[in-house]
Image (cartoon, rainbow, N blue to C red):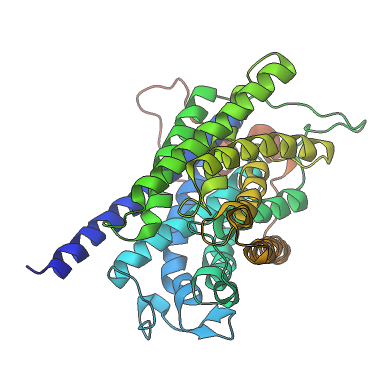
Length: 417
């Protein structure tokens, strides 16, 4: 067996393994969101995440991958490679095409799961299914083509190694559009303008979800090398760990000294914000820069959460503060700290301007495209659950069961479908 064959086999194992780690992050999303929302909506959270996987996988296979990585058309969109067939000879990756598709599919699923949390407890289930199709078949693939598929941002030189902008800022601004359009949960804000808090159903469960996401992030970032022999893997893993720890520590100490208590949801989201912030620059920045990026991400997350409250925008799990705000900062931070052209590394303003332009374009696309698709979906099915459905809980309203309850071993069967 030749060195090339051994290397190719190792790369395949590495990419499949890290793709599986990213797909396991869906379990993290499910537990995190279920723990943050009220008990009566736990099953609905789980069903939305399953829908993300099953519909997202099929849509990205049929259409999304081609639009993202097909042969470029005027820098905007791919036009070949539907069903992973046709002309994809221009792709230069160190693994087989189907292996590469699997890795990219895991990313596509992650994007739509970001939106899930922002619309928790009040989006109509059928409307959410339509939006999964829109996101994984069109909105995300178009953005991905611009930055990673040979489109105009790639040609400009945007540095976004694993997706602070392409995945997190895009998904976060999509989540913001959805949260604004659907409106807050019933009872969240009073007519007098005050805000109420819906207590999380299970914070230990949410913390386990965060740990699963943290674990999967090593696949998210280090797996983006696509090569088991890439010398950057160790460094990518280290800065990923440092930024996550720094984000969580910043949130811990801020809430401890500001409110005289360390707030568990803030610390959980602070660590996730640190992970989001380092995703763009994990292959380009130093350990010290990673600690700084993570700390700023954690603090920005807290300020963004308070900003949403002031604006009466309801985001039950903090999707916008964690993903959009931290992802935006992480993208800009590459222009400051990257060893390949960063301002503070002697590279001047050029890369920073490219990073800012790319961030604005991807964020605006995520917000505007999501807004338009949701408006169109509203013509087909209701966007929001009815007041009665929301009051009873989406578990009973859409799925006919609760997350758990006392019951006999068997109940009389009724055909429902």
